[in-house]
Amino acid sequence: LAKTTQPISMDSYEGQEVNITCSHNNIATNDYITWYQQFPSQGPRFIIQGYKTKVTNEVASLFIPADRKSSTLSLPRVSLSDTAVYYCLVGDRGGSYIPTFGRGTSLIVHP
Amino acid sequence: NAGVMQNPRHLVRRRGQEARLRCSPMKGHSHVYWYRQLPEEGLKFMVYLQKENIIDESGMPKERFSAEFPKEGPSILRIQQVVRGDSAAYFCASSPPGRTTYEQYFGPGTRLTVT
Image (tube, rainbow over all chains, first blue to last red; front, side):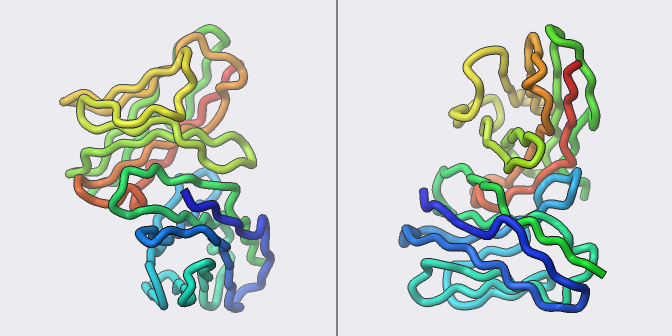
């Protein structure tokens, strides 16, 4: 399984754009990149998944460079309610790998 | 369309008692996963089940823990003779058949406190 590395914590302010980068140097050809969000006292929530280039949905954008050794989750104009832990996962979407959640990145949005 | 349901949401047990945690997957989902989360830590995978089958239990402690997902009814995670170290949040997730195990839908969790 590809190992991921992401910052332990980040701070931001309301209205700013937040970019969280995840490193996955040994990503395999069949691996996809998936991000989850977890609010305090709740289960994680699937946010976005991608393979290469850029993916955008109503919640976030995911930027993946050509070498796929890293990815960046972009949250536009964050609000206080975006305070959460964000997990980056890498794995074969069609395989039987079980998602491995590390410590994630704890994002705190300040007023 | 109801999401993943877990009950109870909070469970208090004395050392040595048994804890039973229940998980009802989303409608149409036949894959269930159990995770444990200790305070200030990430989620640790415990077990992956399909109806009447344990697919992967590599994260389950060898003793006192068991899980099942019967043909009818919810999935059950059972912890026998609980100890203080079992205090944690236990999350269940489900995914539809034939879909990625990386797109899981999580329940709200059961917070187990062992006194």
